[in-house]
Length: 71
Image (cartoon, rainbow, N blue to C red; front, side):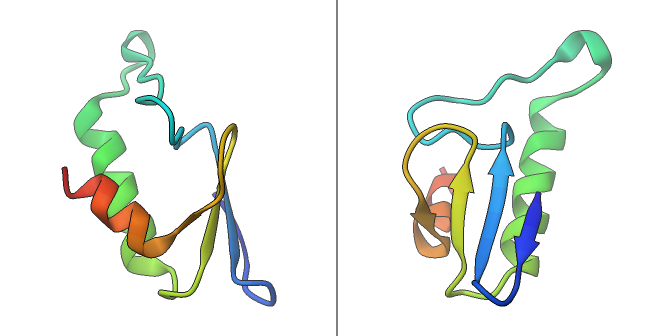
């Protein structure tokens, strides 16, 4: 993730895809639990008015992201 505080923007890249579940590369040791841990860390560390830019798809708000990770 790259955060640009002056613009309240965070680029999430391949960590988040709004239209589908992101790839979890289990062959390299990644897990869904680790992905969710990263999501929660991102959500807790960024200001509420931050816009999140995924690697592909639509820019989302922190409120939307919070609902996504609560599922």
